Every structure is written in structure tokens, then in C-alpha cells.
Length: 385
Ligand SMILES: *Cc1c(COP(=O)(O)O)cnc(C)c1O
Image 1 (tube, rainbow, N blue to C red):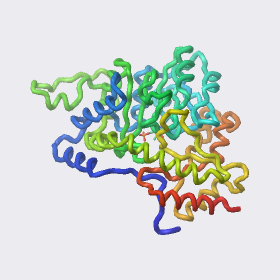
Image 2 (image 1 turned 60 degrees about the vertical axis):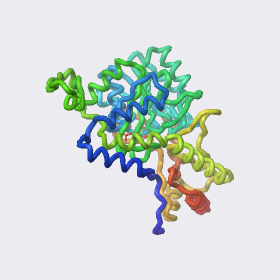
Image 3 (image 1 turned 90 degrees about the vertical axis):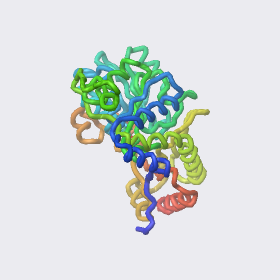
Image 4 (image 1 turned 30 degrees about the horizontal axis):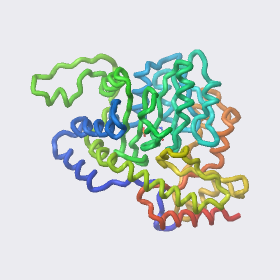
């Protein structure tokens, strides 16, 4: 392996983030407080207003709070895609409900809406689509199906800042809840963190209370208001999911750069598209015409005529100092999900085929054009018979 390994993902953190974090550290207030409030307000403004944003310590926490606020519980079924990270589905089990996994659409790698329709039963309560790699799922059709069957929709938007669907930013559609992730490798990062977004004031109120122990007033309000404020009430057995002001300090500045980051990612994706076009690879699906793709991931698939197995291909890239990854090992192959719900590959032919052929190439804002060239050259070597 070469000395200068090109990693699969890297965050881009500037002096602005560092200065804001230092200011939070010096301020004496490091947990949820003014920086978190500002980050939430900035997020609402970024999405165009008319909704509420609740900052949490991970997207997983936000997805859990979202389903809890939607009243999901034992006996309920929630439909989601097998082609995702386990967090999308594990939150359904946190609440004692059952995930019903459906296949991916081979063209978009997002949830197959026909399969969603077929999976609806009298127990179905909600649907969780994932905007895979930063390309929007077919939300107009999915929302129509949900409306026709009286189902809730929570978007897993961990990859989707900023993504649009029919020209509207993800987070502003007619779904009940949308959750973004600020994990280290996502399109913007707070180290760990997430944002729950909703237009529904009841859902927002419940999520705020459940974010912090089921307390009906947050600590910043209690400790900083002028009036004596020792009193609070516990109204539910809540969770400990609040975002710290240290994380929010990063988020405030990362959010300001979200559009610039998207442009950089889209530029790298376009360079890859051009350089890889003649190779035996299936290139990533693009956004619908006129829409924005967040380009969280650049997901290729080895074509039948590539003449090299996926695992060998990844080893050959790694040997040349190139990091890559697989998105995802579908949940129907993971022992817990496979055994609990008796899932087999034949139930998910599209996802299974994608999995067997898929390789995600490095894609992050700090990549240079020389880095892209290096990856492309390594891909060409790895494809040699
Ligand atoms: C990263 C990710 C999550 C979880 O995000 P965290 O902020 O790490 O909890 C959920 N769903 C998908 C599809 C993800 O990629």
C-alpha cells in the first residue's frame, strides 16, 4: 500500500467552525443553549420557513423521536427499504413495532413505490423512504400512496442536504417528519448530530419534550431566566437526545457552506461521470431533470462484462491506496433482520443485485481534481482482467 492513502470520506472544517466552538467552550455554556437555538433557527430559514427544526445528537435519535411522536408502537408495521443503513429500521424496533422491508428500485436505488403499495396491510402505520446517496426518492408517488391509505411518512434524509424533489427542498415536502444527519461523513457535519424537521406543531412539541427526559422546559430556559425557575414537570419517560452547543457551533457554519459543498460534490461527480463513462461500470443515477442531488455518495456498480468480482475490485483499489466502501450490505442479509423476519435474497432481487456489484468511490469536498484522476487511474488498473 502507498503512503498517501486517499480516504473514502473526509469532513471539511474551517476556521469559522473552530472559532465558534472555542467561543462556546469559553462561554461557560456547553450543552443545549443559544448556539443550538441559533442552529435550529438558521436551519428553518435555510428550508424557507413555515416549519420547526429540533436539533438532536444523531439522526438515529431524530428518527426515533419522529416515530415516537407519530404514535408508532407494538403491533404496528412500518414499511422501509432493505437498501439502507440499519438505523433507518432499528428505530422501528425501539418502539416495539415491526419493519416491513421492501426492495429498492434498480433505476434510482431508492425505495420501490410499487413494492410499498404491495406491502401495505391493515397493521401498516407509516413509511420511511431514504433519499439514497442524496438523490430524492419518488416522493410525489409515495406521498400519494400514503394519503390514499392514511399512512404517515417520515423521510430518512441522512444523505439529502441539500436535495430537491420537483424543485422543493427535502424537508419542505408534505411528509410528517424529515430527519437529517450530521455524522462525520455526511454532507455537513457536527461530529455527531441530526435535525428533525416537521410542519406539525404537535409533533414538534412532543419531539422537543422527548428529546430531553420528557421535561416540559429545557435546561437553558430553567437556568437562565430571570424568575426563580427551579420547577419543572416530567410528562413522559423521555430520552437524552439533545444536541450540545459545541456541536451546534460547528453546524451553524457548516450549514452556511451547504450549497457550496453541494456544488463541489456535484463537480467531482461530473468529473467521475465523464472519466468513467467508457468503462464497464453502471454509473450513479442522476437527479430528475432540474433537481438537486446532494451527492453524499458516488455509488457505481460493476457491469456483468467487467470481468472482475466486486470484492477483488475493492482489494485492487485498496492496494493502490484508494479507500472505497459498499452502500449498503442490505438489511435482508444482516443476521438480526434476516433471522427475525425470515428474509431471503429472492425477496429483494434489485437490492441483492446492486449489493453484489456495488462500490462507492471517494467523494468529498476536499478532493482535488488530481485526487479524482488518481481514483480513475486506479479504477482502470483494477478493471484489468
Ligand atoms: C448516517 C445514516 C443514518 C444515521 O445517522 P446518525 O446521525 O449517524 O445517527 C441513518 N440513515 C441513513 C441512511 C444514514 O446513512
